[in-house]
Image (cartoon, rainbow, N blue to C red; front, side, top):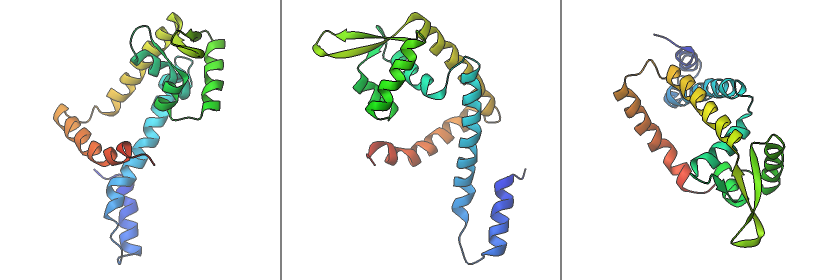
Length: 165
């Protein structure tokens, strides 16, 4: 089965036979897949009236476990945004009733951001929708192929994830 990357690589090999275009066979597919994943995720989140950034914050809190709260600094670390951006996001989520701010009992100046029951429901429902979209994307692969692909992708991404840029 031929795909768009096969056609792109063939064209480059014809036009620039002096170059090794082999990396395109892998990384152009990864790039195209990332765009398809982005679309699928946006669709899954939109079905639950969430933006991708809202999903990121809500699921960071949800993964924290009971009582589903983190400091704004912990949220910054998990979502990779600036403190000003996070403050704005927390404000917007609080207005929607999905999170609440509480005083930090260990730091009089600090606050904690806690997921509300409605926020937990939104996070759980959006996650289920996302997983359904992602299962459909992976449906052409066997469980063993999925595992092998996950291992190979981990080899590529771990250096980026383990060393700050």
